[in-house]
Image (tube, rainbow, N blue to C red; front, side):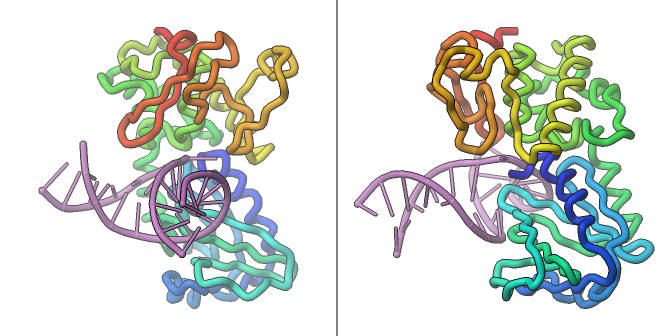
Length: 267
DNA sequence: TCCTTATGTACAA
DNA sequence: TGTACCTAAGGAC
């Protein structure tokens, strides 16, 4: 679930809560902060990369990071009894929102929130993003472009799926290093991420396959990739590339699974 | 019922 | 580089 598009979508969806909000932590780890916030209004929500901020009162923020396992579920009132894994439940008269399994769920100040923004790179989903800030680091780096795209200090919000897919879409070998990425290539990758990730927010899933490469257009039987979106390479190891038929490859890179087509992504 | 896996990150050595 | 953390789904038995 959680790459940047999921978090931006959540920032929008949390806004369904209006008026005084009941705040609780059935699981217990956020109980003290929940008691402080109980009855306050949710006035603002914001996302930067994979970080979500829920604003209460003047300068109270709940900082949420889903990590690998975190999930948020929405429902209509009345809220059912919470199970013991619900870290944070927000509820108004009409609906409730449950958060489970986050890496981070903490009450922070404006200053602490600023510090989080400061350590994140530009986010393709934010209007204030400056892609040249990311390119400055990339163009000076001997690290692989696959690793750079996953580094949230370089670019915020891209995860393992968008990384694999955007590199495929631009024919870029994931093992090329940052210094080998030309300005025009970066411009194209960034523009593509802006478009793909906005579509991800709209649809709440990741689709990256161009219309001309869909199974229908290619005369192949329809398929559904098992993570809920249509993709070229992510988790398609040993399956034939949708374009050239070569087996998709996979490898460990910095403890994550990398996927690519060795023929379509040469240099 | 157990084991593996996952769209993530931080910290220790 | 390895490990810890958090949860739930799916597959092997």
